[in-house]
Amino acid sequence: MTEQTVTKQIAREYYNVIYGAKLNFASFDTCEKLPSIISFLSLVLGILALSFESFNNKILASFLLIAGVVGLMLKPREMQKEKYLDAGVKLTAISKKLELLHSQDSLPDEERRQQLGTLQGEHHAVLQPTPILLTSWFAHYKLFSEHNNKWFCTELRLTWKDKIPLTLRFTTTILLIIVLVYMNPYCFFSKSWTWIQEPCPNGCLIEKTIESTNQEAEVILPKASLPEE
Image (cartoon, rainbow, N blue to C red; front, side):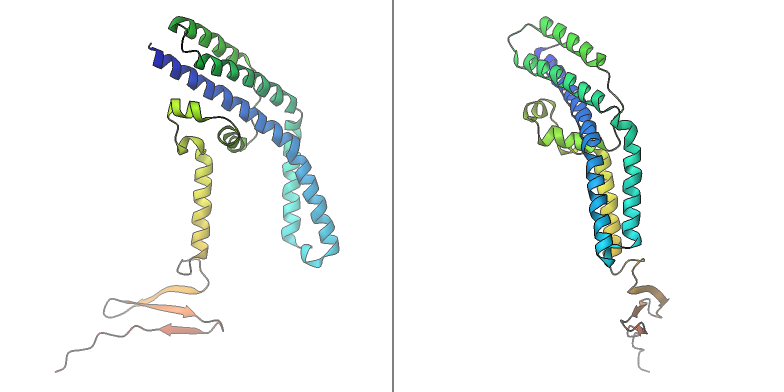
């Protein structure tokens, strides 16, 4: 094992440890802040519904119901928020030791490997509760936006694909496709176009449009001229 390999091993272990710390902190923040945000929004929207008729609708009622369900689902997690905080603090302390070890280039290989093994044992000894759903997105934001990540990104050659979770990219792509499909006036789900009425003799297609008065008007493409006798 060369010096460069030991350095990369330290950087990789640091990344695993600091990401675990951010994931636990993200779960703690979710348990700590999200119920208060849900309660505040529910109270504000409830007051608006009493004051304005436009807010008294099924959409608002559905939103308040979903917010209530989310709040109930977070109740068991709130009992573990201190565990999330404790695990995050312990992992952060280990990450600082790894960062210091990474900077000590003058130490012999064998000594660095021994210290790395000790810190890996401390890492595995930390009890981490199950993270809350979707907090990995928040953890990536904390790690790559609020933390000094340049040195281990350079060491491990991390790209934007490593900084943006795969589930977030997949969800964003699906939502973008849905928006484009419903915004495109030529799509099959559009209310302004009805596709392909019948084929023309010369191989073209007749399209049928619906005017604003809801009267159908056929747009017939010119037929191919017949040769004169």
